[in-house]
Amino acid sequence: MTRTKKWAGRASTLTAMTAAGALAFTGLAFADDVDMGNNSMTVPEGGSDTFTVQLLASSGGSDVAGCNATSDHPVTITFTADDAWATVDKTSVQVTDCTTTHQVTVSVAGSGVTATAGAKTTLTGTATGGRSETVTEVVKVKGQDTFVDRTVLPAYKTDFINVQVPLLATGPVVTPPPAPDADGDGGVGLLRQLCERGQPRTGRRRQRRSG
Image (cartoon, rainbow, N blue to C red; front, side, top):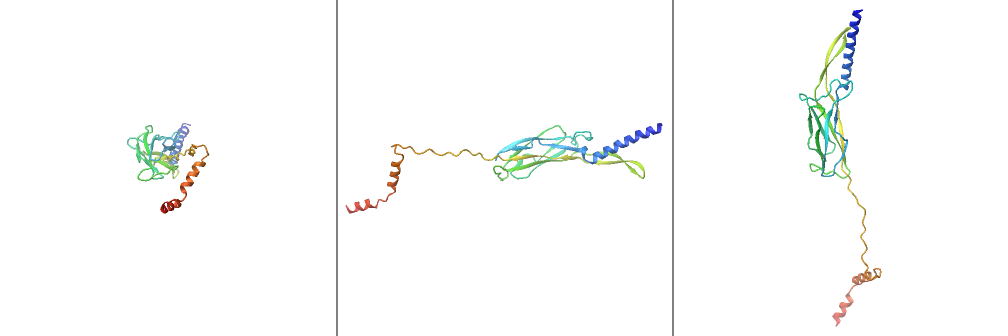
């Protein structure tokens, strides 16, 4: 009876370790998130705006590793834009924990490339590096339970921000007021004057020559 209990306890331990190893290899245990805050921003042509970024440790019972970033094993978050007119003051930031936020400035129209009004692009943050972890699982080798150590590499979820250049502001069409009618004839006198100015004056010149 005692032997059965011992084997049952050992079997439970082996099952738990095998389950932990299976979770690790599916990537669930190390899926830390890149968090870039609000996923959209509007930046005028020639302007700039700032966002914050940090690494978030994955949560839940499968998160046996916690935060992947440490001072000994930092995580690098790299930023890339789909279009050249959107640039950042930091192409990457180095993260050593999952609580500190970092500021990054996005500028529109740089390196001689001008963005047009209404243009859109996507800025993506991708994480690399960080610590790995060794997990132990139990496998059957010739019918015997064997402990095997395997290294689980960190994995990350990317994040993005949609950057948009605002449309040019368009106001109402303004029609200039009509010219004032000083003599009250509805503009007939002004029209007569314009017509007279446009008439040829050859007859007058001939009369002066003959005199």
